[in-house]
Each structure stands twice: as C-alpha cells, then as structure tokens.
Length: 83
Image (cartoon, rainbow, N blue to C red; front, top):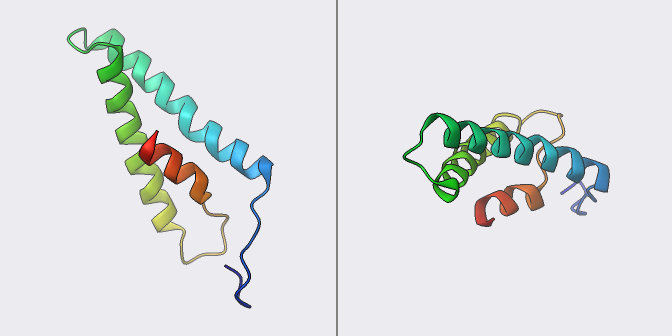
C-alpha cells in the first residue's frame, strides 16, 4: 500500500522478472540435485529446490521491506509457497 492507503499496482514486467528470477534457479537447482544425488527422483529434487528458493526469496523480501527497493510481488511469493 502507498502512504495514502491506496494499493500499489504491480506491473506485468515486474511479475515476469520476479517470476523468472525465482523459477529459473529452482529448475536449475532441481536438475543439479537430480544429477548429483541419484537417490532423489524428479519430484523430490523439484520440491527440495523450490523449498530452498522459496525460503531465500521470502528472506530477501523481508530484508528489503524497510527500504525503497522494489519488493517481490505477493503473487510470486504465494505462487512459490503453494506451487
């Protein structure tokens, strides 16, 4: 929300950037996990990678919460958490 109580609109470019900056590393991490930890199947690798990326993304968002930097859109955070 803005200082005057109105909700800020998030641009589609911001959503695309934030989404690609979270899902691309998650996919790469899942590939690496599956390759180097053969005991994990694809689903376990994906879940482990998404869990770590989600944790880091929420941590980053908390870190910049008090600054004037652009925060991670809530849609991206919720998609990571429930996706």
